[in-house]
Amino acid sequence: MAILKFQRPNGTQDVVGKQIDKWHTVEDIVTSEAQVYGFSEIRIPTFESTSLFVRSVGDSTDVVQKEMYSVSAKGDAELSLRPEGTAGAMRAVIENGLLNESFPQKVYYLLSCFRHEKPQAGRLREFHQFGCEMVGSQDPRSDAELISLAKSIIDRTGIKGVELYINSIGCPNCRARFTEALKSYFADKQDSLCDNCKNRLETNPLRVIDCKEENCAKIAKDAPIILDYLCDECSEHFEKLKRCLDAMEIKYTVNPKIVRGLDYYTKTVFEFVTTDIGSQGTICGGGRYDGLIEQLGAKSTPAMGFAMGLERLILTMENQGVEFKNEPTCDLYIATLGEKAEIKAMQLCSQLRENGNMAECDIVGRGLKAEMKYADKIGAKFSMVIGDYELESSSARLRNMKNGELSEIKLDGSFAYNFESVLVSFLLGADDIFKQ
Ligand code: ATP
Ligand code: MG
Image (tube, rainbow, N blue to C red; front, side, top):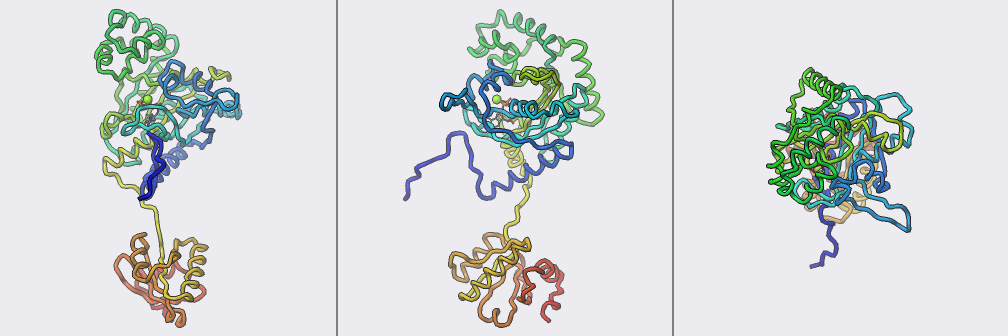
């Protein structure tokens, strides 16, 4: 037995065989729904300056501190594989002058992200995000529109029981007061927190509320709630968002524990969570980041976005038994007997393909029986056998692989180009016209 020399890196996945149907299903849904909402696709590099991520995601976050894949090649400034899409997308929006266009600018992307995390179900080192960013509106109606898009996508996948949690983490003004309150709440409980949280209390106290350690979560249970510290503007923003969601009949639960893992968020944050794929149940996370664009050196512009983890979306669909679309495989398989027929089949296949039909014939040298088995295996809808008799009589018998029904067809120069009408007539039982 050959020794397998290489294996895929830990935390990565190959997509082979029928698995790709699942990806195409969700990719079609997310892109078509984004287009319905007026979003246009952007494509950005796989890596960016490390400093872009440090600036936007935040240097006290786990993503930047522990999870980035960074390299410095030949003395260049350090580059990192993107751990998320927003930073690069905003860099691109700024760099390509989209801030000078009319607002809102609505962009979406489908891309792979890289984080050095502990691989487990729904948590990979290379994973795929579908992300949407909406730039240039500070009105809560834009928050509602974005949330509505995420909801429509989830609905269109057919999965059920996904909860929407929303929260507001305020602007830097309300955040400052809240941070003080948090610090004093945790002051006499510091020693019982995990080492990470001890640090976070200094660098980023909001993160302590988000800690997944059981003990930290217990201690944080009665911590102050950010919603009690919102300034009038942030509070009104949140109330109007809720009014919009109510009017749009989007069900949500206000969950003050949701703070999100990245530093750039302000005001609205939200998550769509399922309980059907274990502990990594956040399918989609997003929020407003009104300070980010200015932080990246451009004129202050409000913006917000969300990202969906496609692996988690697919996992949920699988676990709930949702149907994926079946990619078509083969319309007609042409089996052959003898070299003349082989050449004729090559010609027919080429004509059929020119006509947009998925045709296959033997190109590996199978015997007739094995050819038919193969036709079955690849899911051919129809098949026919060509040998000397068929060549001489310019006719053949078309077989409907589903029910075995046969129909005599004319094998003349127009066969391939009229293939669809041949099939229609066959299926309607009106094959006589082709016999004349
Ligand atoms: P989590 O709560 O799982 O740690 P996160 O807050 O780090 O997620 P974001 O940075 O907001 O996630 O990314 C948006 C979405 O991308 C998540 O909601 C999730 O669906 C997906 N995602 C994030 N990290 C991973 C990963 N390592 N593997 C697979 N999907 C991921
Ligand atoms: Mg994470």
